Image 1: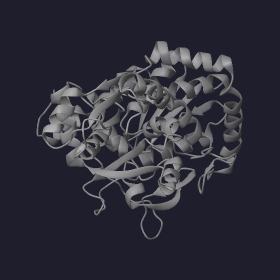
Image 2: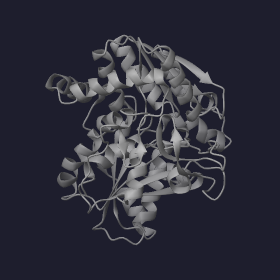
Image 3: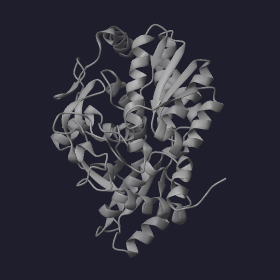
Length: 403
């Protein structure tokens, strides 16, 4: 499959582009120019690689979940399950890969203030972390509902010196946090760099966030032959905006023998209004500066979403995923809250690894895929983050009060 997207204007087929206020066109152009110049600059790449190795802790391991594999085999699923351990990165998720890269861009552009949006809080923590390291002022926008259900990450951001601004408009979740961050950037473009946390937004963000997260897939191209003996049969990752998934998928696009599966948040079911699965049950439209698949009503208004996972609770998706869906190179499915919760508990008890609720969606679908397959099949799941942040959500759902 020939794949050279995006084009010069930031389009992935009919998706992507720049649908923003005129005041943002110049800073976007400056960012595009700077990234085009730096992404092949040996000094910049050496600095990025040094930070990823010695600050983030890369490469992350590829772990064979042998006990989980054996348990699922007893229930009819015989495929070997492997976990790409992004939860072991500094700050506990894949988000730091992109944040380190964008922060270096901000430094080269002479910016002194960083803003970000966050849902589950992992991107906010990663942004606050690198801002502290570089001595930059940091402001993080977070939906008021997410502030409540992700309180440990809110406190972590504040400990790191960031100002966390609860967004009380709309559904008070990730969509609304991104709206407020874009408004901030419009009014502070001279000194502010906006570190977007996913492969959405106007060009060049979907491209540069993908490129910084593609370190995950590049490592797997080496690790899979070493650990498995060949490339895997399938790779599975959760999809909200889609950064962890595209980071895993992108280096594997030229390998059609590897099946790529993105797992959206089915919430209470995609046949109900309570989900966050635009690729499974949405339509093309424009959101947050790019054309992609969105969740909208008949009048084109953005629909409310639901997921037990704050990081997947978003009514859009990165435009590259939209193109991969239409082209057929990747498959997109939805997993509801309950199977994701079951996978969360099972991995925790069987392997001693507490996954993020986002990652648990991918794990739940991997279990479905494994059904009926023999032990000569191999499935790699991107364990995109750890679940410390979700313990209050889980406890509340189970009627347990934590101090």
